[in-house]
Length: 114
Length: 113
Image (cartoon, chains in turn brown, green):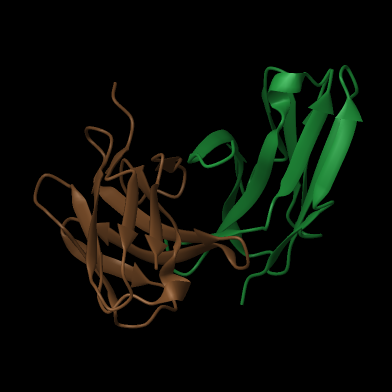
């Protein structure tokens, strides 16, 4: 069974540009969450999608947005990039919203903003 | 607001040693606690998941315990190997309708041959 896949794996963008990252969950998983990892702040929750609806959102500015498609694949978008957005962006999937289920993480997208 | 702390931030041990990593959380109203492993520049690998009603979970050389009332968890690694070198992260899922995991900053483990 294929794991969580994220594309692209690496990305370099210029300040002010926008970027879209993609996440394909494990087959059969319907919940997708996004996290930002930086050396200073560690791992921080961005948002979670289930059945194409955003269920939870972390404490990030509106420049960060996402969506989920009917096949459970998810995208996140960051507009007007800032240097501080440089981070590893991780996506995680779960079968459903049952608390007993594990979250499985993808390899991440390394975003560098110059 | 849930906060997760991991001590120590870094640990270096000789191969073969048994070791314990610590995790503490401020709000005991959790659904579950997970331990993850992260290799440099990579994603997270789930090691163990402990439900709030459980006291411990074991997988191979790993044993994780949970004391919800005191807000603590430990990850015990037996007979450490160089391949265990990685950053170990603890994360809690809290009650309140959120799928959000709150992570600690991790413990960077180095096992020396």
